[in-house]
Length: 387
Ligand code: COA
Image (cartoon, rainbow, N blue to C red; front, top):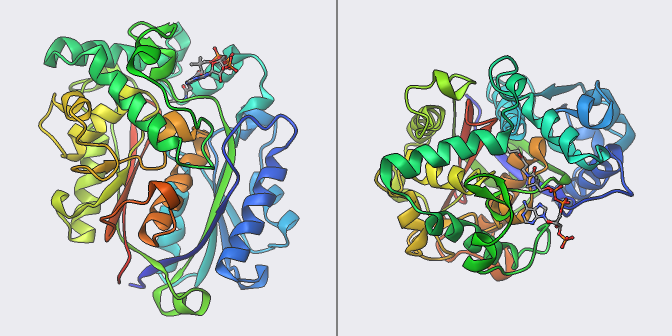
């Protein structure tokens, strides 16, 4: 099997880009990526696009044909969808095609332009189509509501506290304040989080990731070709994916993401690493409870203790394990189908010592964790500086 390297990345700042379009965002991300890898469009054999719902957000399907040719890329293109994990899933498919020897070099791009829907109710409904249509969205359970149920159950079962959850948001906003590409770059206090308005009790405004626009792209190629494009490639050590029931009531335990456990197991096995080998990680914190579950289910702390681990500062930049140095979905923003690629770009920059003020000091191995919906899908990818 071919080994795979990442040789260039590019992205838009995450934000609410009312004066731009889905195509405008992808054009910008692709141009930056081609420049970063010093590659011409003709050298790209295929494009893989992660996007959750351009049909609902922008009334635009068939984006595989919309995006590439407009940027001068006429290679075959495929859209990959697995809700908020679409970006990471697109990267997995690209890697598999290179590992199988089918293509040498591919462009992977994640995009979501969510603010074309002006009414937040319409945005919430579009997002909700990634839950169980019959038993969740169909009876009015939005994502904030589903994660609120999970958070409430975690508080009941393990005694986790609102203060613990608030500490996740405070830490991620602090990291986001060091990231010029983040949607929110302001420091916040525990009081700001705990006094913010209720969205779906016990979830408050600052427990939520925002509604965001953004596009992010990268170039993957065979290990043998990597040095043609950059002196400093990043290597994919292993990838894993897992699923579980889409409806939370069908899960064995709603406070555990079995999909994350499955994806982690596979990725760590392929990468031949153990939890202690990880220097930093980008986890999927669509709500503060989701970061707590990730800490526990990936294995950084005992089950039920993720919130305490966060409140005690173990996940701060350059502490026990740097979690979400980019600011995470909470502060960097969450353009859903693009998020997985933004996570990889953060790992790419951290591994190459290019992360500026938020640079982590231990940076041999970085990991991304990206979930779809309320955790029915998880993708975990492991990257390293050396091959
Ligand atoms: N965190 C912090 N501040 C936020 C925020 C968030 N998640 N969302 C909005 N804001 C801020 C805005 O910047 C704005 O600030 P300003 O008045 O200083 O300009 C203010 O709150 C009002 O913003 P608005 O866009 O009107 O908020 P809203 O009520 O329409 O949306 C949520 C708030 C929480 C409902 C929305 O962000 C949301 O749905 N988040 C979850 C997204 C989601 O489910 N993603 C998929 C996960 S599976």
